[in-house]
Length: 158
Image (tube, rainbow, N blue to C red; front, side):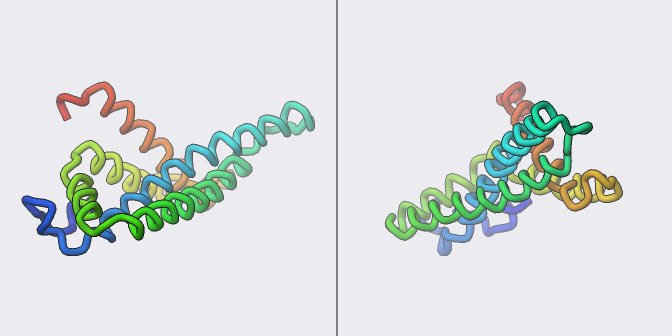
């Protein structure tokens, strides 16, 4: 869906602009990592407040808030690290990395599924009061985890 829209090449030296490919992929990886870290951190905080602060309900709003902050943090951190690595490395290395990203089918499936489930989650969960704007976060996390399980089980068939 995303990296497939960029021009196809047969060899890595044909890639004229490798930086957008590598950065886009890194932003998606940062989104995925941030959502997972935000979910874990938010769940721990909400669980702590329910158990030790004697709150009546588990706060999904708290979890989703952490997921949003985690996603922003992940994108900035991974994007910054990738940018610094790209600046330090030579052009040919970036071309090779962009080429590998374009031809890695499983990686493209994961990236596409994350974006698609982000959109679907936001559309499906937009009317739930507890979720509000975090539906995309929930959808992206669920989609990312689901596609990882599917690829792990059916790796040779996909």
